[in-house]
Every structure is written in structure tokens, then in C-alpha cells.
Length: 316
Ligand code: MEV
View: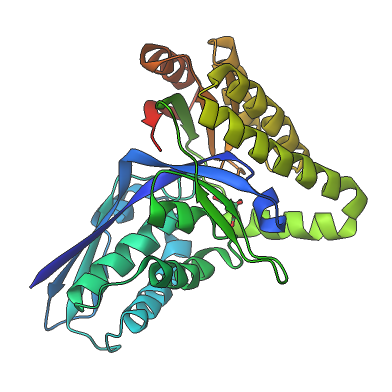
């Protein structure tokens, strides 16, 4: 028998990093980029192949993946109730570059769980899928806020705030009156989310009076951003992107490549641009006036060294 599972990639519109510290954030799935799993019965199982990722990742990135993927695979088998020696072969394929801020590990986790659950004929509720994805993302990132896998599992545009103390997590869909046309630029250099998050945590603990107001301001931007998105007010969204970029830069996670991409996007007439994801190499997102404008901004970004870019439309 063959069973399949899939999950899209994502971009963060507001609140990366601050979301780890209890602030709200907004992310949206990518319609044309993601990961798929195919699970087939195989007497030599369990096995997990990643033909495309294996070919495209750099050795350092691959080393990290080799450590984490077998552990995530074992957790996923157990989570769907399959034995550790299950006779299953999983092939993971996709078009999401790893470690650049587009949610490759969250998409991997959700697609793997969906495929294995279908193979085991044990359908997962949304809550169960989120619980399983939390475990797998923990393997990749240590202490994930939950923003990435929640967005990837639910799909669309999602406002998210992690649970804190007695307060439960907040998860709500953000309705969009029209697609948001954006350009996304990606550098060749991968970032390490786990390291970036833990370095920022240490800095924020050492300098709470410096970092707490920045986290608060980013959280306020996520709330304003939700209003701009719901109103379809793209010029305002652009202004809020610009402010969020300045604040995320203050957290020390941006790079020269990200700064160049943000400036280039603004020079090309983007309504606003910001780093998206964990940073440390990474990706930027620029809000544009329409489809043709997003393509023009993407092509301006591709004029920078070692940058790949694409235009896409974000949907609710
Ligand atoms: C990574 O895509 C997003 C971060 O905010 C980490 C997290 O939310 O767990 C940097």
C-alpha cells in the first residue's frame, strides 16, 4: 500500500523571534512551495529517503539534518502508533530550501506525520497533528514557539501567540480580502535557527531592559499588521514591514545579505520589506503593489550576488 502526506512552506509576516518570547506573530503558507511524503510497505523498512534535499543541501547543513532526521523519524513512527521496526519506506520530496526561513523543518514534520498516519490508517485530528509536530520541531529547533508548524499544519494566514503560564495559546486565522502580492528573496547562506534563538535568549536575559521593549513593540506590530491585512491596506502593511525589519535588526539576527535585499527591494519600489524567518543568512519578504510589481521586485533581488528570488501571492 502507498500513503501520502503533504505540507506547504511558510513566510513570517510579523513577529519572528519575539514570538518565542510570548509576543503574537503572523505567518502565511506558500501555495507553490512545500514538502510531500510517500510511504510504501517495504520489508527492509523503516527507511526515510530525501533524494532532492540530499542533493541540494551543503555538507554542513546535511550533517545537522542527518543528526535530526533519524530522531524525528523515530518520534513520528511512535506518534502514529507504528513500531520502531515498521516495514515502511518513506520518501520525502519538496522544493523548499532548508534553513533559510521558509519553514522547511515544519513542513517536513507535518508532511511526515500526515503520510505515516495515513499509512498506519490512524487519521490525526488537528490537535494531534500539532502535538506531534511540536515534538518533531523540538528535535530540529530545541524550543520552537509553535508558529511555524501551526501555520503549516492549518494553512493560510495565521495569527499565533504561544501559551504562557496559565494563558493558553492564541491561534486564529487572519481573513484576507484579496491575495497579498509579495517578492521573496533567499540567500545561499543557511541560518541556524536553534543557535540564533538561543543566542537571543541569552542576550535578552542579560539585558532585559534593552530587549523587552523591542519584543513588546514587535508584538504591537503583529496586532496592527493583522488589521492592515484584514483591511487589505497594502501600503500600511508595507510601512509596518519596514518598522518590523528595523526592530528585528535590533535583535541582532540580520545579516549584510538581508540588509542588501531589503534595501534593493525598497529601491525597486516595494511598499515595505523585512527579514522573514530566523535570519542569520536567510530570507526577506517585500510587499508589492500587484503581481507584475512583485515579479519586478523579485528580478531586482536576483540582481544581487547569490540571491534567488520569486514572486508569489499569499492567500487566507
Ligand atoms: C523561525 O522560523 C521562527 C522563530 O521565531 C523561531 C520560532 O518561532 O520558534 C525565529
